[in-house]
Length: 275
Ligand SMILES: Nc1ncnc2c1ncn2[C@@H]1O[C@H](COP(=O)(O)OP(=O)(O)OP(=O)(O)O)[C@@H](O)[C@H]1O
Ligand SMILES: [Mg+2]
Image (cartoon, rainbow, N blue to C red; front, side, top):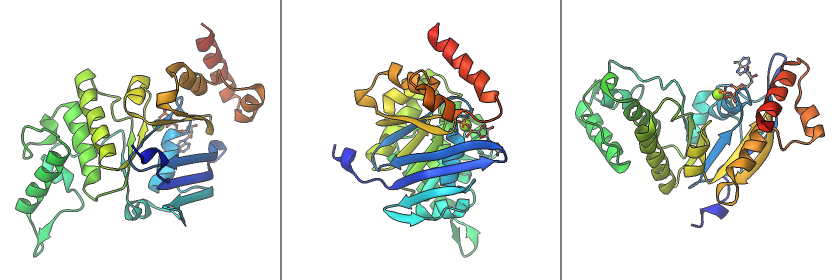
């Protein structure tokens, strides 16, 4: 594949974000390339969700630069991200259980014909979309409440694709899924990559990350703590970066906030790593 050398579609430089006294992100760098799955990993509270929310326009950055296809952009609200071509699938999915698959896919961007919902066109587009992604659902006219967890997740991802985005952010898409359903979602992620999309995958599951990601970006205490090419790295190296076992003392001290909370977290990481 030539994609390894493709220029980034989205670049973050020196991005910082505070919530009051909490430094959620400090000087974070991120490059996202088309045709690549970039995994974003790190412990609870490392800043992963905050980082993707800055990209999605939910939490605009306090400082730092964001570029899209080489041009500096401002992402101040979700609409800005959507306009650029950035779609996000949040962990809580936000599907409407009582509505069918078609209605969920087009929620908020319904196709209308002379101001009346064009059910035929929406159903056709829904089938086309699911077909191109090889997503198999018993019927596009059943309420999503009756789908399995894996099917609901692929519907949520398909919904993000309705606006033809170029970057798709998936926050823990397999967290609630069993083995079979996880495989289904990982297959879909690979198809998104094959179609040239840039995928940002947040995951706590190292097996999933190693199965589908091309690159892994590690966050720790709101800072970058390593970028790995999956093909050239071991799971141990990545886990060491996540837990901070690979930190030197200086990086550790810098990573600490003033609350003392991080100190206790720090110790538990050390213990768990040394066991
Ligand atoms: N809206 C908010 N208001 C205040 N603090 C927040 C807010 N969102 C996140 N934080 C804080 O920012 C830090 C990073 O949180 P974030 O949710 O980005 O972590 P995460 O890496 O996604 O963790 P997890 O793996 O648990 O989902 C945490 O200390 C968190 O408490
Ligand atoms: Mg999170």
